[in-house]
Amino acid sequence: MATTRPSALRLLAEQSFSRAAGAPLLAGNEVELLIDARAAYDAWLAAIRGATGTILFENYIFRDDALGREFVDALAERAAAGVRVCVVRDWLGCLGQSGARFWAPLLAAGGEVRAYNRPRLASPFGWLSRDHRKLLVVDHAIGFVGGICVSGTWLGDPARGIEPWRDTAVAVRGPAVVEFVHAFADVWSQLGEPLPVDAATLALPCGHVDLRVVATVPNTAGLYRLDQLIAGMARRNLWLTDAYFVGVAPYVQALIAAARDGVDVRLLVPGSNDIPAVGSLSRAGYRPLLEAGIRVFEWNGSMLHAKTAVADGRWARVGSSNLNLASWIGNCEIDVAIEDDAFARRMEEQYEQDLARATEIVLKMPKRRRVAEGGAPRAARAQGGSSGRAAAGALRLANSIGAAITNRRVLGPAECTPLLVAGIVLLAAAVLALLWPRLVAWPLALLAVWIGVALVARYVDLRRKAPPAGEEVPRPPG
Image (cartoon, rainbow, N blue to C red):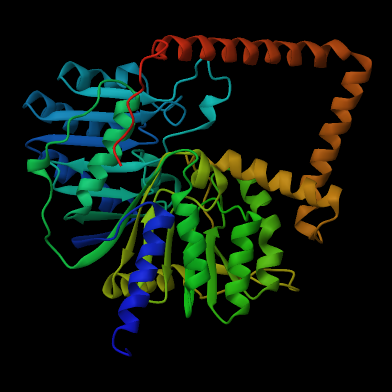
């Protein structure tokens, strides 16, 4: 009996993780950690230039700069050689970053490019959902995921003294690549003709790493459930890195409970955010974490954009998801959750190296305390970033206002500015409504008309697609 209990507990944990994430544990993979954009770009371009069958590329930002054009040229060369090249770009992420002229060489060579979630009259607020993934799959043999977009911004600007952004990605070979292909094909089919997946070309085991591919779409929240489970099950340590952390109450409570139970919980976030206002709003949530014993650090470089976690020297996560509701619930995201001692140790080593260039935030001190000497000064802000930024800032502001109105928690000094800004904006809106009511009534009426027309149009569309009366609707097997 004593010999079977550990196996039963492991099976129970595996079942819980699989159900929470909606992703099975896949054995037989090889995983390579790619630190920062230069290493990732070199690996991506090498894989693209060596492609013989298919290239599936899905990314939030493709920027029309020297780096972006290098990628388009490489993709176009392969497309002209007969490789099927399929690209999914996010409409909002690429807005102002790249246009039709940027994609012309690839399209002329026979490549295919589709934009995710353009604004539509039938969905007034549909544009809020974004494809925030950073996914590349070549020949169904190797796949890459992480937080890195196709933009020279990630490489910094040495001439102006701006360091490269700090980011993380992984290269994966083995059965997990199958899940990457299916994840891409799922989004591709939403935008046009589906992508056939040839089972004969699927990747075979080539390593010893177990992992899950957590490919989320809006309103599935698989990674959120998994992150909650990890916070609840961590026994020794839980070290998090996130670009746009927003402390939603349930997750913050899970982190606090872990810290109070003796788990070494750490959070590393940007010190110089690419949108300074978002960074200021994010700091408003530090106090409850610090009071619970969670250690919070701010990166000293130009921008920290990685989204990673490592727990108990056994479990690690790398991908595109930030710790906020936009990523957990609103976007298409893709992450890998890796269960491997050697990889987790490598992640812990990298985390400790990152902390050597970070500043620890402490309570009851007027200034931040340096973790180690030698860290570079904060560089100038760069442009670019992720879809979670605006949602993160809005949610932080909403949390502060809600706490002030309901008195459900003690507010910290860092929340003074958001409350003042919100109060002035609301008072100004009230004055406008009293003096010029049409300024408020007309926009609201137009919005109501738009939503009403969209709902009626959706009803008509669904009725057209409905089967005739009396015809049986086919049911899925099982």
